[in-house]
Image 1 (spheres, rainbow, N blue to C red):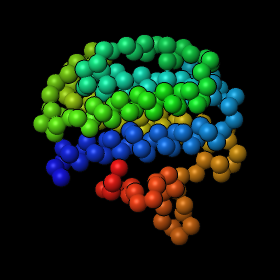
Image 2: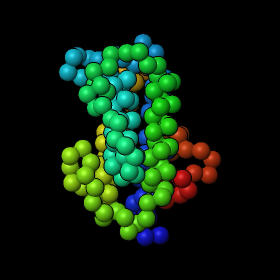
Image 3: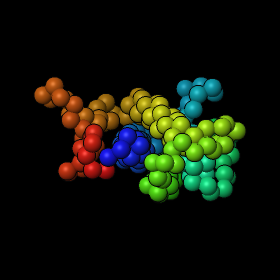
Image 4: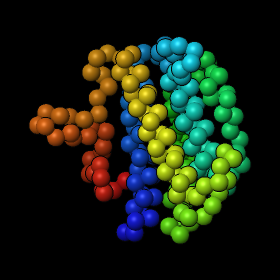
Amino acid sequence: MSIAGSFLERSRYYLCREYPTKIRAAVEAMPAERLWWRPNEHSNSIGNLLLHLSGNVRQWIVSGVGGQDDIRKRNMEFAARGGATAAGMLDGLDATLGEADEVLRALLPSELLERRSIQGRDTTVMEAVYHVVEHFAGHTGQIIWIAKMSATPGAVKFYEDGDGTATPLFLGEGEFEMGGPV
């Protein structure tokens, strides 16, 4: 496999398998009333972060790379203070990631250096994909941290460390974390 092909495969894996699986497990482990909790007015709740991730992926991948209309209202992602349920937002995020996966699956390695204008920035397709994966990873960590603070201790766990090796608990039978089927 080419470097470009490997980059696209790993990006799809992180965006459509590992990160959303961890987010769903973390959110489902915490009390429902903590979904919209904020430590202060300058911080975001998990609800805001779920809306924000969906908006970011849609704007950068589905619209910016895939060519669909950009319908994002970024300020609304942060202004929300409730109304949506965790299940509804997780399902919405999964739907957006499904659309993004279709775009990424259809990309040819030769298209990675094509230029796009996304969110007023001149960027390549590869830079856009890299940005989204990096951005998603950062907010995944925030969501997990908030969920761990809110859930029963030990309820949010992704690895088994019994023998000193971090064995992923979030992978299905026959999946490999690095280099295996996705």
